[in-house]
Amino acid sequence: FEMVSLLLPKWDPRYQEIKKAYNYAEAALEGQFRESGERSFSHSWVVAVRILSRLRMKDYRLIVAALLHDVPEDCPKKWTIALVKQEFGDYVAMLNKYGTKLPRWEFASREFRDRAYRLQHRFAPRDFFEVKLEDRLHNIQTLGVCSHAKQIRQIKETRRYYLPYAKKYNILVREIEEALIQVEAELKR
Image (cartoon, rainbow, N blue to C red; front, side):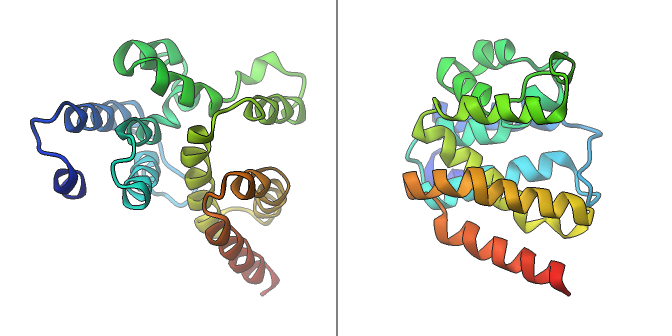
């Protein structure tokens, strides 16, 4: 929280809300790991810190949403969008809802689920993409430990669906393009 405390005093309600989200996300994602072996919560923290670094304190709720961005999808039985709304308000819940895929059992295939997920992005506000594109950038940058098939799928998905939003809203365009080039170069080796 050193970076947060440089921008906000510890007694500030925004600081307290960020700390609360940090604690919720860390507890919710406890025991979950990424393919790299890294704790899932570490990814959420990286996304939040990058938003904080890039936007400073434009809106502290973006940092809160970033900390919680994987929680409703990865822990749906206990950590629902309704709980996020109750604890962190309508705005954070709305941002998290746009970033949460519907349950797998509601779809006949992964393809239909992914299509429904991407469709909801058409109606998402710009602030959602501040979080989502930072999330996608970190995911692309850490693809090296994933299977070849997953790397190819993520690259194609990013170019087809997320890079156009990055360009539309002018968010992380250069960073995402550079990360894609680097991952593609690694795949060719």
